[in-house]
Length: 269
Image: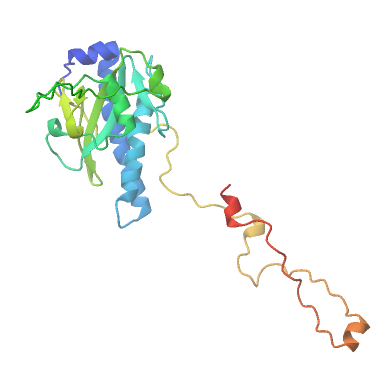
């Protein structure tokens, strides 16, 4: 891929633009490797494990790759389990747009959630589309979106940088970055041509990532797992009173069960 950087990238990320682009490609490669490893260890007939690990990794691996850049800041959206990375003036939002290679210019945002609408307040406004009919006094302006959580404290000149990628359980197919408006039906209207990201073959790791479940050594008091090899329990025996024997009172073999003091419902409170 050419080392050429678009003006928008240099404007948002400054001298770190090339490094941000490089690390985004690396983060997605790491995401794919982790998700495939999780799927393999799960030995599942479905790809649910891959999908869950991929969704988590698209945010966490990006954060790992970018967080040590000068000026990089994690941003926690309201009630969102992960943090998005702000580098310079660029707020980075990675998402999967396809399970196969398709024209990224036809990509849609998978879910127009409240979070997505908040994020796109940092994106360009979609071009106005003249309808077939004009109704006097009819206001089609969308209501203002109130920013919450970490998004509410972002500088007003922050711009949303989209990182759409295509992948499936078999491989990472392609990835791009660029700036777009959110059009009708979640369709993206690109202000810039989405540019391909370089996807390296090698995987990098940050810290300890579990790839094999280690054998857990058993402590000495748990080594005897067979019921007939453990220590014999101590039994407390007592003689029956003469009065009980004379009245043919049945012997008491075990204590009466005590009433439960806690229920399953209590565990939920």
